[in-house]
Length: 42
Length: 238
Image (tube, rainbow over all chains, first blue to last red; front, side, top):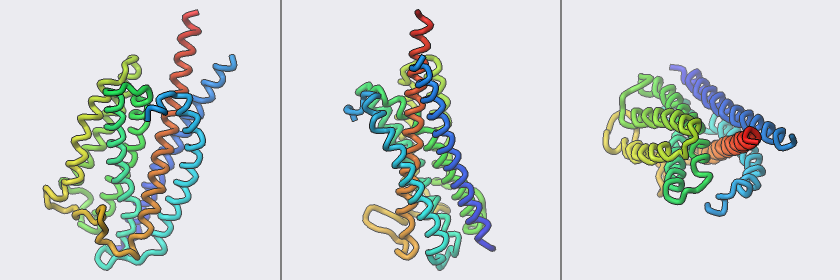
């Protein structure tokens, strides 16, 4: 059995889920901090 | 820990720490994965599928470490009423759930060519799946309690009770001798040859930095959201 499709699939899953987590955490942080700053300036 | 109880002081440290953790985490994780894919020899038994270890082992460690963090935050909240403990527990949960999921999926992908099956109701696999569901329950309970304006004490109790699964995961390979192999890496050494092992610390540290960065970003988001809610309430009350 050729192992490379399995190795590739595992790395793709790990990279996509980690990138998704980091992207989601960053976007939610930026959104919340921008809203807090905007309200402070009012 | 108590020095960081003040959210302003915490944020002063968390802002630069987030950037550094992201940068160091990205560099180490990419370097470790590239080294694991290109520079290490195939294992004499597993062949090239051994390369899945460089992402599977860090994700297993982080899935478990995440819940240990939740348990520590729960104790801190219930005993010392640390103001950031509930925020910290809720911030760690999505990262822990993600890495528990990565562990389960990559383990399943590794199992197909090695064991000849995608899934087996083995002690280690089943207890890890339970951990993933515990995370989902914690996330749901935490957000429900927060929406109702609770202090998060029920969520903290759940976090503490759920920690009983951690020794079960750890010792499952000793208690139930089924498909999953025993411990290859311990505190005193490793049964894996150094020519294969060396990129593993890189991915371990790299993914750990990314995990902590994700948790810090979630904490910053929750603190900013709490600030907005408090200001809106004050404005509404005027």
